[in-house]
Image 1: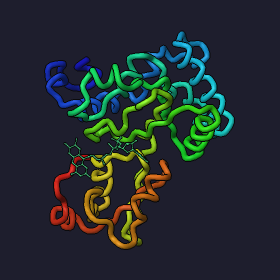
Image 2 (image 1 turned 45 degrees about the horizontal axis):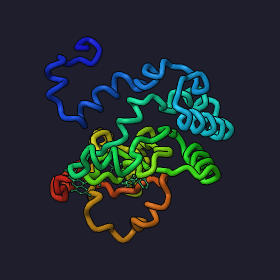
Image 3 (image 1 turned 180 degrees about the vertical axis):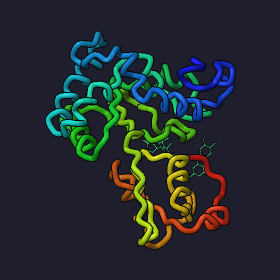
Image 4 (image 1 turned 60 degrees about the vertical axis):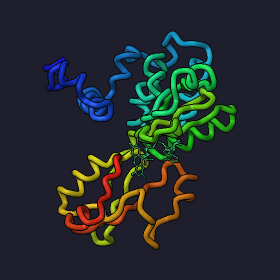
Length: 240
Ligand SMILES: Cc1cc2nc3c(=O)[nH]c(=O)nc-3n(C[C@H](O)[C@H](O)[C@H](O)COP(=O)(O)OP(=O)(O)OC[C@H]3O[C@@H](n4cnc5c(N)ncnc54)[C@H](O)[C@@H]3O)c2cc1C
């Protein structure tokens, strides 16, 4: 393990879950493909609901996505029971096993990691037509189960929509729906700029209102940027 991820097992176990996940993800971007043995969805041995939903979702997305994305589509449909069970939790401090196991169907039937707006649209159309509950998930950092399914169905894991586009002349950074703050800050720093505001702060007048952003799961977030000095003056220590 030490040779694969670059830190000792002891150090790995001491690392908090967030950074731990990032360490693994950097080294094994398609870890789930190993767990699902890299097999196409149709060839996996799966519980009936998972099988039915994964196969029909695969078909719906395959018909719309581009050839490059199609090559990784099977690996982005998570069906393994352990991997799906990871989506039963966020950073929650309130939801115990009783709530998760008895009161909700918190484990999704299938998890899909879209890489484009086209794929998200296809998945949503499929879900609407088939009556499948949808749960959106970013980093899963809310503390009250917001990104945990209440009724199984599909979780759209947006972490691969992680683009960071810097429009310096407009003073804006356009962030993918799944972009995380650490890489965002790193990319901005490499260009000598930094965020001027954080999500928890009042929206500046030119920013789209938060309700319209919530309705569109792939709407890019537009964040104002400025000189690095602005960041230390404005930062309030929100996690992210
Ligand atoms: C210790 C701690 C401290 C925190 N402090 C702050 C703070 O200071 N300021 C602050 O703002 N937040 C704070 N939070 C909350 C959390 O960091 C934010 O809510 C964060 O922005 C959630 O982002 P996420 O990607 O993890 O969302 P998730 O937890 O994945 O999802 C949150 C909710 O949004 C929905 N959702 C996710 N992505 C989308 C999308 N693209 N479109 C539509 N709906 C979507 C999900 O279904 C879910 O209901 C804190 C959380 C913790 C645990």
